[in-house]
Length: 369
Image 1 (tube, rainbow, N blue to C red):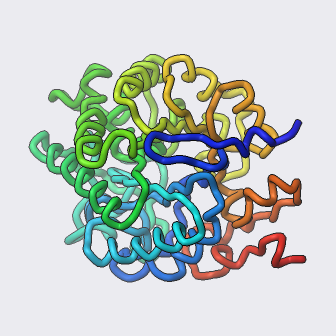
Image 2 (image 1 turned 45 degrees about the vertical axis):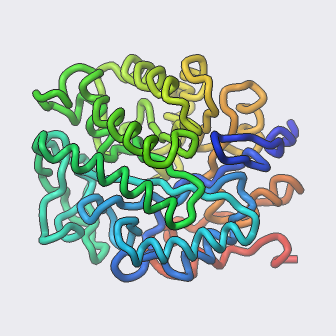
C-alpha cells in the first residue's frame, strides 16, 4: 500500500494543512523555570515544522492545573513570551501549530501546586497510578479535593483565558485536553464523577463542564480554531464509565453541532498513553465507530504505522492521523514517509525530563547521509 493519501491537503476549520501527518501532543517535561518554554523547546518544535499540524504538549491553564514537573503553562506574561518564540520558530519554517490546553485535575501532586494544595477533581476519588513530585520523585497518589460547585465557573473562565493567551502567543488554534483522564474526562465518566449537583448524575449533567468550556473558548477565539481530544474506552489512571459507548456517542453527536475545527480521538488499542509498547488489537476502532456521528474533520491517534495511517484515511475512518513516538524520534517524519526511508528507533528512557538528549538530537535523513 502507498502512503500517497497522507500527502493531500486538508482544512481544519480556519487552518489549512499541506499534509495529513499530525504531530500528537507529547508530554516531555522540559520547560524552564516557572514553567516557561525555552529556546530548547523552540528548537524541538521547529525541527518538526513539516508536520501538517503540530499539537503542542499539554499546557497548564493555571497554577492549579499542573500535573507534571517541568511542564509548561500559559497563564503568565513570561510563558506567553516563551511560547511566542516557539510559534515564531515553527511559522518561520512554514509550519502550523495549535496549543493543547489542559487541567490535570486529580492526576497531580501537592508539591506542584500553589501553597502545597491538594489536587482537585469532580469527586474525592484518587487515581490508580502514582504521582510525580516537583523533583521527579514517584510517590503514591494523593486523595484529591472535590471541587465546590462555585469553583467550576472559575475554571471554565481560566480555559477561556488560556485560549486567548495561546492566540496572543501566536498559536493557530487550541485543542482541549478531554482525554487521558484529565479534569474534563474526570467530569465526563461516572467512575470518577459521583457529584450530586448539576455537574453530576446523568451523562447530560456530566458533560456540562465540557460544554461550558467549548462555548467559552469558541466565543473567545472562534470554534473554527478549536479542536477537542477524547479517549473513548481509555482507562488511564483508573478512568472508567459504566456505559462508555453510549456516553461518547452522545458527546460526539453534541460536539458535531458545535462546528469545531476538528475532533481528535485516541484509539483504544494503543497502550496507556505510551507507558508500554503493548497493543490491544482486539479493542474497538474508535475512528470507525464514531465516524458516522461526526461529519467534521476527524483526527485519529495511537499505534499507527505510515501504512495503517494511509489505510485509515482511504477507508474514510479519519481525515488525518496523529503520530507520537514516531515524531519524537524522527523530526523529519514527513520527509521520511514520503521518501520511504527507514525510521529512527526511540529510547524510552529519554521521553520525560532531561535536556537535548532524546529531544533535539535525533538525526534527520540528510544529517545521517
